[in-house]
Amino acid sequence: MTFFFLDTSTKQSFLSLVKNGSVKKVSFLKGDFSLSKTLYPELLELLPAENLSLLKALFVGLGPGSFTGTRVGVVLAKTLSYAKNIPLIGFSSLELAQKNSEEIALLDAKSSGIYVYEKGIVQLYSEEAFLEKFSNSSLSFVSLDRTPILEKFPKISIEERVPNPLSLLERQKNPPTFSLEKTASLEPIYLGNLK
Image 1 (cartoon, one colour):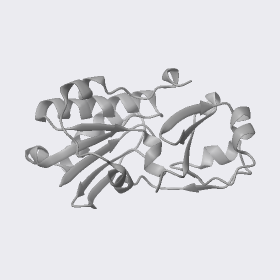
Image 2: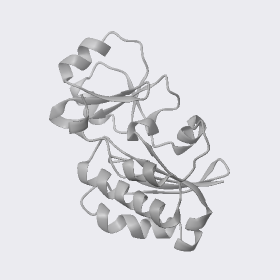
Image 3: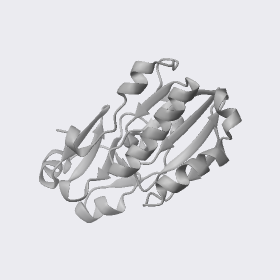
């Protein structure tokens, strides 16, 4: 089975083609202002248009992260899903850092605090609230970009990871099926949507 992964919400933006349980191709993208110009050509280089029909499902990162970057990726994934009737599965971009669901994934939310992905839920914490809840914790923290987190919280131990689409596949419980309603209702995780 062939799956395609797309995440454009963080500095670790990437495209990945996974076939029969192994990563066949991966392309890391600059998560900057050129993303909207380079994303589609990179996709076609990784997965020529005639091979789109071979996909069992598309996986798209919903954020949190860059507002524009996330929208660009989600719109492209929805367009491909609609056009080719390919099942579309959204995931939190923070899941890509986890090897298992016991780890807590973190992402810097700039002046708003820190995003925390724990037990399938993305939450936004102020710096004070994060320290209050997690400072004496023995939990395992991971991130796709730990540098800004360590600047805010120099005493926590955090492992930096590269995106891992295989861990997402392993956690899938049901085989993907195409649903127009599900594709249409897929929405990015924006700062305003979090509590």
